Image 1 (cartoon, rainbow, N blue to C red):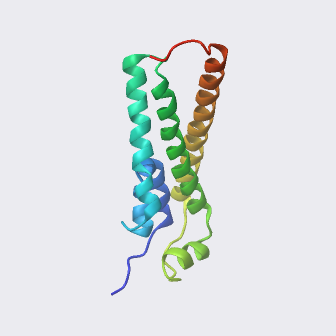
Image 2 (tube, helix red, strand yellow):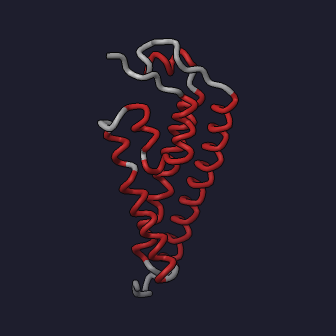
Image 3 (spheres, one colour):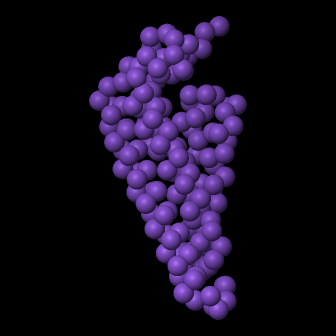
Length: 147
C-alpha cells in the first residue's frame, strides 16, 4: 500500500486559504497531526472575540484577550505555508514523499508563498499593534471598570 504523494504547491495554497483551521497540516501529515488540531481552537476563540467586540464595543476586555489568538493562529499557518513553499523539492520529497521524486514547485507555489507572506505579515503586525494598543490604553486608565 503506497502513500499518496504530497504536493508542496497544494500545501502552500491550503495554508493560505484554510491554514487557520489546520487543513494544510492535515493534508501533509494526516488527521493524527497534533499541531493541526491545535489550529481551530485559537481561531474560533479569536473569531468569538471579534464578535464580542462588534456587539459590546471596544471596551470589552475579554475581546482584547481573545482577538490576538486568531491573529497568531493565522500568522503561524502562513509561516508554515512560506517554509513549505520555499523548501527545495528534494527536501520536500524526502520529508513528505518518502524520497520519491513527486513534487516540484512552480510559479503557483511562489504565488502561494507571496500570498502567505502578505496575509501572515498583515496578521502578525495587526495582532502586535492591537495588543500593544490595548495594553497601553489599560495602563493609561487603570481605574476604569471592565464591561
